Each structure stands twice: as C-alpha cells, then as structure tokens.
Image 1 (cartoon, rainbow, N blue to C red):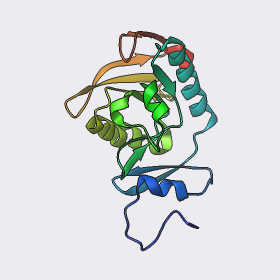
Image 2: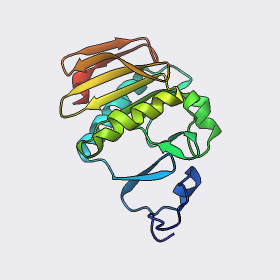
Image 3: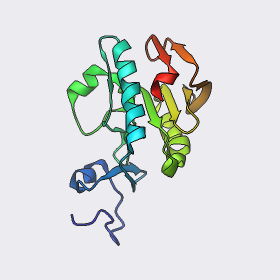
Image 4: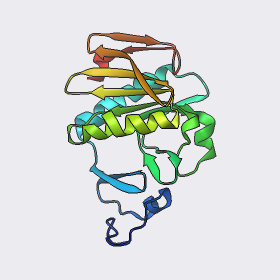
Length: 183
C-alpha cells in the first residue's frame, strides 16, 4: 500500500488493514470503518502517560497488567489505542491484534488539544458502548483527572481531581493516586 487514503475504494477500514499502513510517525485508529489519523503524542503527553502507567503498575495486583500501546476493538471496524490501560493479564498472553473490551478494566486518555473531541466525546461513547468499566480523562492543560464509571451504555462522572488531590479507589483495583505526580 502506498497511501493510507485509499481514495475511491469505498471500502470500510478494518483491523486487518492496519497491518498494511506505513511506519510514518502517525497514529492510526478506526471508528466505524473510517480511518482516524493523528500525529504521535508530544513529549509532555508521553511523560504523563508513562508516569500514570508506573504509578498504577506499582499497585496492580497479580493477574492484572497495566500497559500502553495496545489497541482495544469491539468490532473489526472500530479500533482505539488508549494511552494507558488495565487488563486481565491472561488476555495479553492470548495475543491477537487487539484486546477485547471484556478483558479491559480501565482505559485512560491523556487529552491532546489537537483532538480533544476524540477523547472527550467519541472514545467516551465507544468505550461506554463496549462496556469498559472505567474511563479516565487526564487533562494536562487543566491539570485534572476526570474519573468516569460505566453505567448502562455510557459513563457517569464520579470525580474530577485537581493536582492537589490524592485519589483513593477500590476499582479497577485498590489504589492511591497522588494526582500531582502526573504533572
């Protein structure tokens, strides 16, 4: 494949098509058969995601894995890559092109100014429909973490944490999160 645009083909993108895309400095996701392209995250975005992964990883119990750079797909025509996730370790051992939403306990998106709508609206909606129990939105500009819990086919906001807060929770596992350590 020479161009990810596939002009004129009219075919929906699927999870299988991602394997044919070039390594060109872009991040690729799929929503309802449409290819979503965005540049790789900047350094601050990556640092925040890495700090959060390390904080969660230190507290995760045996059998749960905190990770990055693995996609989640409920259907072959939708595929998203959260900045951080918590999943059952056995799901990662099974392999495959993406995690099934049933194996994922938490997804976290670090909100980027250039595509905030994708994290705040689109992914919130899609992760909710997929039944992922917990969704966190980390907003670097505001220095906040919004904690969302799955209810019905969507999410309800259970907390908005400022940098000075220390979040204590029992889900997705017992944890203590000093929010200031992210920023």
